[in-house]
Amino acid sequence: MRQQSKKVMSLRHKMKRNICLSILAVFIVLVSSCATMPTSKTAKVALVLGAGSSKGFAHIGVLKVLEMNHIPIHMIVGTSVGSAVGSLYAYGYDAYQLQRISFSIEKGDIADYIIPFPTNGFIKGEKLEEFINKTLNNTPMEKLKIPFYAVATDIQNGQEVVFSMGNTGQAVRASCSIPGIFRPVQIEERMYVDGGVVSPIAVDAARRLGADIVIAVDISSEVDRIKPDGTIATISQAFSIMYSKLGHIQLARADVVIRPKVGYIGSGDFSKRHEAILEGEKAAMEALPQIQQIINRLKAEGRLETK
Image (tube, rainbow, N blue to C red; front, side, top):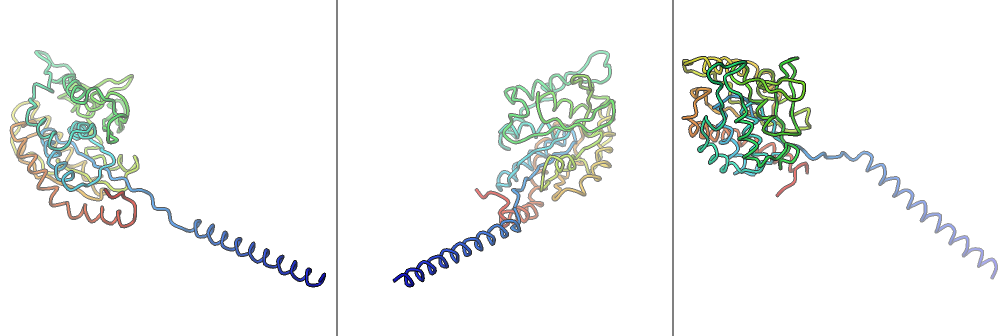
């Protein structure tokens, strides 16, 4: 009986040891597989809206197409007029609401001319700041529904500055302050002018902010084909030429570039806003298959949430 009892105990001991070894082996396999398993980071899609004064109405047409086709936008980076349109969309207005706003706006709503003796610019820019803040119910940048960034230029050192917090209207005003037309904007101890001086289409800023996919809207590739009439028009056209030349540098690093054909629209021409929106829609529709291919790939990889 004792020998039989010893055999049973020995058998039980072996079974326990084998079970423990099996559990340990499974644990090692699981740990090693987890260590080697690739982690799929959720992709961020950035919409970069470029500079271009009145041609910026085309941005609204682009947004209409992206919205209609459920293209996700995780951040908006805007320069000059791109910051104005981008801030309104980031607040929560849909593209059709933006279109209604654009049809009702007049130059006098956003341009406060300095009369009779302009100093350091023909337009103060205060009206533009007030218009943006009023339309956004004074919502600061960090509380907008979509993360939004406005690109300006520090006139004292020539560096690109990306605003992400604080007074939204003030950041947009700084981003839109074309030197010679708008007065520079002072924020704390620094003075800022139009972001297009250094980054008319801020693709690189979007990458630094964490964008995996960049959809850039270039409204400055076609230089104005009209003869400028007056000092402001001449300065605006000169900046359009500069935007066109500088924009190509960063556009090469975008995943998709949308180019509305708005070269026939003058920088200060509000009368063709409807045509600009239509050109934005056309250009976005042309780029849509490329965008959808990227979005579908990200969804297949599990890097985008499907709605």
